[in-house]
Image (cartoon, rainbow, N blue to C red):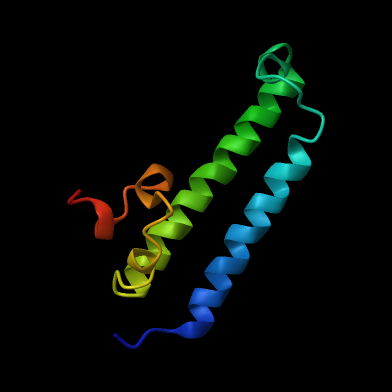
Length: 92
């Protein structure tokens, strides 16, 4: 296993958790997908959630890169390529 910055890994994981928590709080009153598109407030929520999902995907990509593509591959039960097309799973 390669050496990598454990503190940076932990920070990225905290960022991912924070983004997940923010998404949960933003959608607590959303019942159906149409709640996102029925007015400007819903569209703004959709935009905010979309940006957080993009941030999570980028964070996972960075996590894979800084761990020299050795961490995510240890958890094959999770479909990482559906979150972000990470290098360790692109060959599938």
